[in-house]
Image (tube, rainbow, N blue to C red; front, side):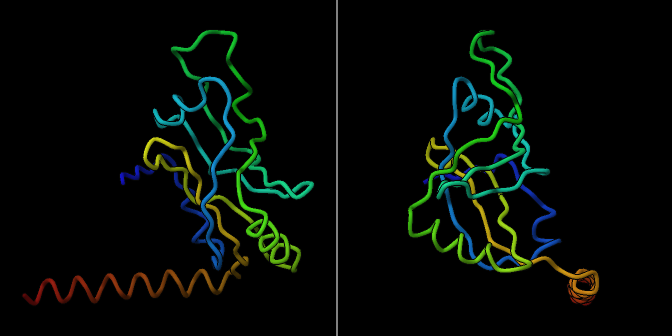
Length: 151
């Protein structure tokens, strides 16, 4: 089982306390699969929505495949449908309807030849939470460096 990360949303873990994680398939058209597997994808400015009990990712940029024909080129920022179970969609819908929760993509990956996306439900962090996280990370790094210098 091989998993290759193609795109990552690094700011998600910094800005949100992530609680529930899901893995979803993506409905793609034309040469989008080739373009994504070539690493021509970005999810930095994207977010997920639920409409009519279906999950969509909005703002995911997939650069058109350069070697494809001109007829199969799609809009790079089009809304794409995500494939999840009804049970998972209901769980997400109940959580996101609460105040302060967001539904965002974390990572696009190639898992055994299939393009999958990891999504999560998270609650937004306050500024002091972000500062505490950075302080803890910095302290941990200092301790590791001190231990490394000792030996």
